[in-house]
Amino acid sequence: MSGIRILCDTNVLIHLLNNNTDVIEFLNGKQVYISAITELEFYRKPILTSKEIKIIDTLIESCYIVDLTQPIKQLVKQLSRKYKLKLPDVIIAASALYSDIPLVTFDNDFSDIEELNLVLLKL
Image (cartoon, rainbow, N blue to C red; front, side, top):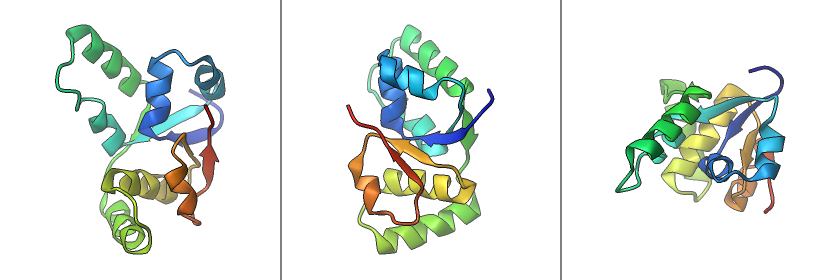
């Protein structure tokens, strides 16, 4: 992958898997990063077929994973005290902030995080 680095929220990759042409076009040529929490969220569906697992595995392998490191945990603690978001969203935001990468999402809840370089997509 080459080009602009972005960190995608889980919902962006869901739209990608659903063949959303706008998302496909937007992601084309970009280095796609995801938080470790995004990687794990894909496997939460109670029943995944082997075909679905293979598709998810392929997608995850094409992304750069930002692991949950001690500095990111510190950011999570700070953001959690300052903003009222669900823990997975705070981890994703902290991953983007720590990595100094814009966060791409369809979720307007991230708009409250003033420190975040946010790319808010619309359906």
